[in-house]
Image (cartoon, rainbow, N blue to C red; front, side, top):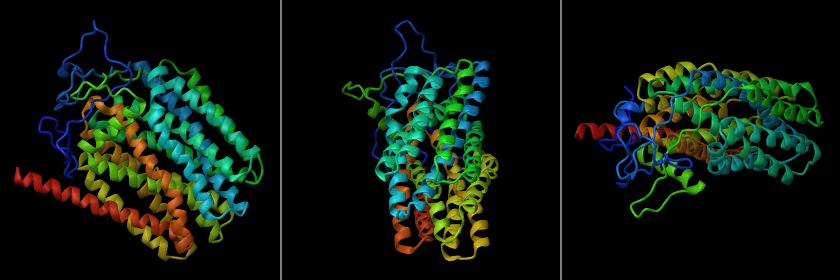
Amino acid sequence: MKQAHDSAAGQPCGAFSLPDAQPRADFIESGPSSNARVAPVHEAGYEPGYEPTHGSTHEPVPAPLPPVSSLRSTAILLLGYAILITGNGLLGTLISLRLIQQQAPSIVVGVVQSAYYVGFMLGAVYGGSLIGRVGHHRAFVTFAAASACCALGYAVWSSAATWAALRFITGFCLVGIFTAIESWLHQVASNAQRGRVFSAYLITNYLGVGTGQFLIGLADPAGFELFSAVSALFAASLIPVALAGTAPAPAIAHDAHDANGVAYGSRLARGLSGLRTICRWAPLGVIACLAAGLLNSAFYTMQPVFMRRVGYSVPDVSHFMGFALLAALVPQWPVARVADRFDRRKVLLSLAASAGTLSVLLFVLRDGVLIEALGYLYVAVAFSMYGVVASYVNDCIPADERIAVSAALLLIFSFGASGGPTLASAMMAIAGPAGLYLFTALVMGVLVLLTLRSLRASGSVRRSA
């Protein structure tokens, strides 16, 4: 059975040796008012077994239970997100294809695309504070409008440096949207439901990104029409959000202090607080989330380059990318069901081993039909990992840490993703176009070894107890 967080015993879910340090508490802007009653743990709706963090100067303040009307608002917000992510899926592949048409080297494509994830990483640290101040809906509107403006910039300027800057801004905005939605879902989901709830969000994501790939064939990537379509989709995503009702208020938590009373009040400290929490309670989650970021970004950005280099046409690339990302939908719900019933680390191990094996085959094979068939399987397996990792980490941490941890997971993911295109393109320069899959095979090999180490170490702890 899957392993749950045990705050009383002080034993993290992962099994790497760590210093004996207490985790920092999560917070957004301020604690309760002086007249507010803080509910005891058993009244607050926390999962059984949760206890307040030791060393904290305040009782934890629970996230309010969302009203029934907020479920409708959540569905409408996801609709707006689906429209926006369709445009983002189109934009990512379009940029790679456009740079190839301009005869840019693979390493230039990798660097430009990496800028998106660098912005993604910084947005994970600084974007969350806007959600705490203005709420989920207004944050969504702000970030989506800025992304629409950036999409038009690609049609105006053509230099790689300018495109890298625009990709950076777009990444910053998109992670703000992801943080709003993911933290919202984790607030309303229990441990027993989290895998399935999160998989519904990922299904929306892959459906939108996959649909965006088919739009590439509507016009020549060398023209301005597709960039205008991206901007229109970003703008259209605001319509359902503007019509939605009141969203659940962001969870309110207290400021954390260390033993000397130093407040961790800066935005950077909030992001690092979530990172420290993951390292304390679920260290394997750091490595697994990093690996998921490397794989996802490498595929999104460099797979079109790989296919064009080995002779595929633009329509063929469009169709493969679309069907591949739709194929990622297939295992989401079954994998989530399995991960909700068993130790999520064992599920993660199976996914990593399968993705690594498929990567080796894709590196060796040269047959076009086999490349496409195995490519679909690879995406279905590799893109199932992030949901398992996020659910595993949220099982392990104290319940009042989830807002900061959601942002920290995106921070870790984007740190890995920022290096994925550049590292993959460097491997492609050394080993040829198929070097993309040599890179992913190496990443999965490392994750398999560390997951085995975590499982064996936790087994040793149980035997010695």
